[in-house]
Amino acid sequence: MIRQPIAFPDNKPLTRALAAAFVQVANCYEARVMISRHQKIVNAKSTLGLLSLNADDQNDLVLIAEGPDERAAVDAIMELLE
Image (cartoon, rainbow, N blue to C red; front, side):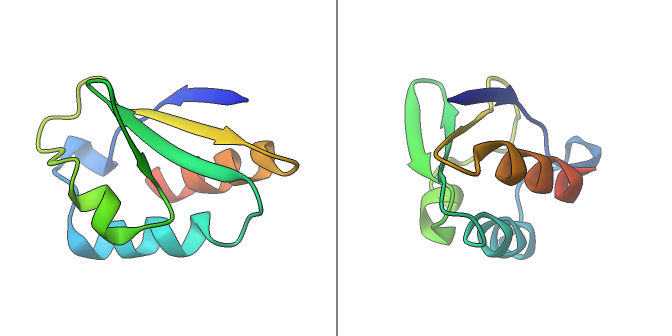
């Protein structure tokens, strides 16, 4: 299991467009991909799940990946967020 703190580009709030791109990348991998924020964990392969985080401030955002290609999934998502 990989746990990686994350922030959205330019520390801006999560938009629908970024959530859709995030989900598209996450769905390319077999690994279970989630985001944790303030003890809430959502499926990062779900646009609705991501938007439910209400991540206007980006404190305590953690990307969690677990599975056979977890490292590749985390690397691809981190690249998206740069």
